[in-house]
Amino acid sequence: MSESLINAFFADQNVQRLFAATATWEPLQICFPKEINVSRFLAWVLDPSQGHGLGDTAIRSLLTRAWQKSDEAELPLAVKRFLSPSNIQTEAFSAVLVTAEVSLKGRSLDLLVVDPNSRRYIAIENKFGASQSAAQLKDYRKGLEKLLPEFMGVHILLDSNDAEPDDTAWIPIGYDWLSEFLLEAEQRESTAIHVSQALGQFRRVIQEEDEEATGSSPHGRLITEVARSYPDVISLMGDWIRKTGKSERLHAFAELQANATTLDAKATLRLFHMYWRRPDVWEQCLRQIRFSPFVALLRREFQDLLLDPKRVQTTFSLGRWKSFIDLEQFGDGWFFPAGVTVRQTGETFRVTTYVHLAHVLADRRDAMRQAATSLRHGNINRRVGEEQSWVAVRKRSDLPLKQALDFSVEQLHQLQSALDVARHVVPAT
Image (cartoon, rainbow, N blue to C red; front, side, top):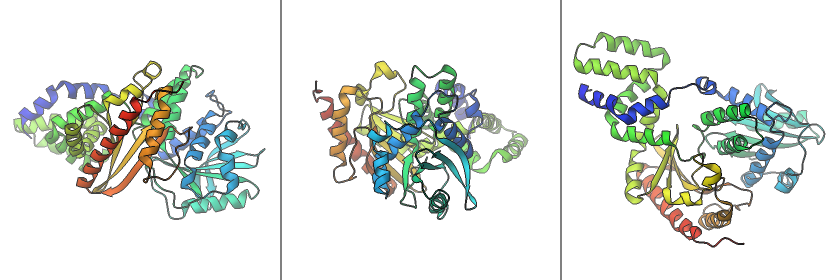
């Protein structure tokens, strides 16, 4: 690697801003949560008796999302009736018992919420990047049915990778629900400042793994710009990322130090210093290089393209749709109202087209919901409920790069046409 290229990298203001902006001070980012810690945090949020002051709003929110996703599971009629929003919003969950790490058949179910008065339970298996084990969900369900034979159970798979349960009795819910709930809880005037700060820290960490919680991100724009400007430098860091885990960095440093006898080698050593200080940041840049064909093609097609790169995927939206957002209420903390999310899985891609109503102006939601329904026709044969904020319009998996590129362009054009109509619909009075 040439000294001049590395010096240009160090001198770039975007690189300097990215390095400075990613200095960590929040405890939850320093102690990046593993799955068990996420589950314990969820247990705290879901427990109405804890000191967060949110009451049972998290349980109501989770069960409302479960109702929205209930068509994807095979549920008894009694469970479907229980999950109806008109029932959930009038139920009282203040007496529930919440626990994490429940031993069942030699394994640990992540979360269990038991309502002894109503003889009901909510089982939650939380997957924070991990995969399901063989028959895991079925074993949990059978174990609970044996222990609590007179209780009605709701079984939820909460998965950051949006995986399908291998037991059809489980309702799949993505981390989009969690990040959306946390943001809403943060923004409530009734939420105590210290609780709001804790919720915000946790949301910012898990949002990096969340597929759907995408918004207007200055950090994401810096990642994209640095990755686009210095692919060779980032690719060299990619070699270090692949070959030097935490335990191997000292050995790599020692080797570079020993061989730093030329100007180029000394510059490479200085670059390694920067890599060592922010390995996660440069890994995000490396992933963004992998999405560069999408960025290049979509920018040619759409002049107002917006994008938000995350740890495992990138979401593309259009600037014109900002007119749908209630900026007076949400300021800069808003999610894209619609877009296409691209996730790489091995050598192929999964592309999801979606509409997100969480931060949309109240008088625009019906028009956007109608647009989502029309776009869904013939693709996903499930209703778009009035309580539903995030709507998957279309999903395609296992696409080679060329097909994923073509499909992404096609889907953004379809969204553009449908939402251009929605922008000019006169709201009902």
